[in-house]
Amino acid sequence: MSVQPLLLVAGILLILIALLDLSVRVRRIEKMLCRETELLRRALRPYNHCSSYSAMTAYSIWAYQGNKWVLKEKCGQADCDCGPPPSRPGQYQGEVVKKECPGGSES
Ligand SMILES: [Zn+2]
Image (tube, rainbow, N blue to C red; front, side):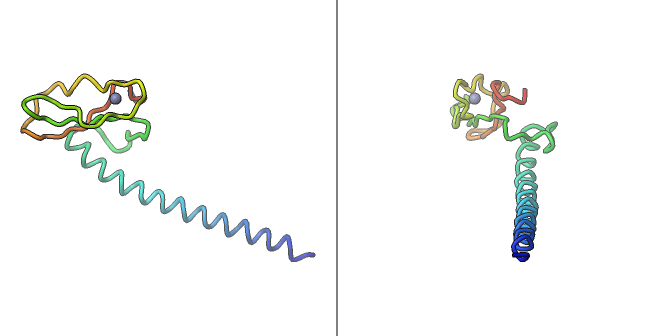
């Protein structure tokens, strides 16, 4: 009967180690994703930094076509029309930008 508590402790330890390992992996993936997002953001908006990245921020994707911005992808927020389009004109046909939505919770 005295073996059981030991097994329990060992089991809990194993779970803790697994969780720790998982969180390290998740953090590594996050850092990787963050770096890519950072590059994209830096290209689009020079003053943003990765630390301000939030999963809650909503973005819409706009493409510059026929001398105007066309909404390519909505941000996914239920009651958001994702307007207005980016204020600056596109630099070339087919330019794609990511725009923070006014309905985004970060603003
Ligand atoms: Zn939107």
